[in-house]
Amino acid sequence: MLHAFTRNYNDLSTDAGFQFEYYCDCCGNGFKSTFVESATYGKRKSTERLGGISGALGGFFGGFGGNLGHAVERGASFVGERYENQSPQWRKEQEQAFDEAQEEVRSQFRKCPSCNKWVCIEDCWNEDEGLCVECAPREASYVAKARNAAMRRNIDEAAETATVWQGKIETRTTICPQCGKPAGTGKFCNECGAPLGTQRCPNCGAQVAQGLKFCGECGSPMQKSYKCSGCGFENPPGTKFCGQCGTKL
Image (tube, rainbow, N blue to C red; front, side):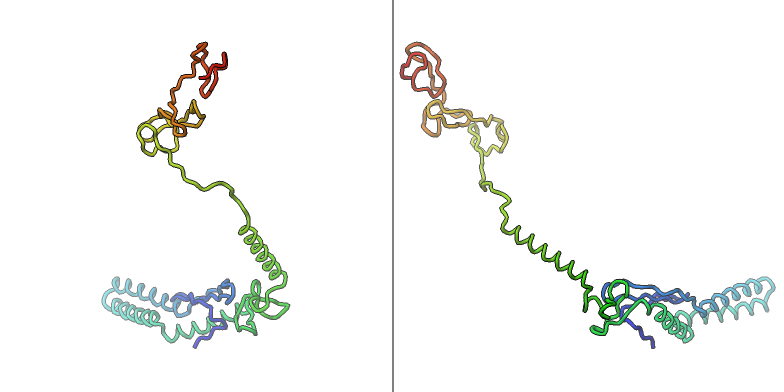
């Protein structure tokens, strides 16, 4: 029976030969053993080639040669069937190849006496402590890891209390003064195309949408005339007394 020195291994063997992969219990990295050709496979190939040659000779020379070739081909077929069914010879070869593969890659692994894991020497073995890095992390690596973990916590805590936006959350819907439907956010209504600009009320100075005939704040007509009745001077909207003669408008 085959026994691996680590539970993490993969059998890559085929009918042509034997090869195995062994993996680290910690990081999963591994090593592949040298491919060993199967002697049983080589013998089968030789027998098949001999059978093919004999068959050709049988066809050329007649009955005796043909009978001999047929017998050899049957023998080759029998060997092939035993090989595909993992014959005792193949199993013996596999066991020997497996033992050799273990010895080949064993030097790349160490067994941790604390957790009993087989780990690779290069990445997962703490030589100073004689333990795997999961049981005894390397000091420099662990300090760097802890320092970066603390840094991330500090950043997250600072982000929780940071004010990154101070605007007002509100929703505005512009109603078109022409058609009375939501007009969108452009300069013209999305429904009827009416201009969405504003004009100043001549009485109170409030901003009134274009197209409205009366101010929504004071009710004054938007087309009020500020022409002075005394001197005829054309005053700007919103003026209460004529700027030319002082007459009340």
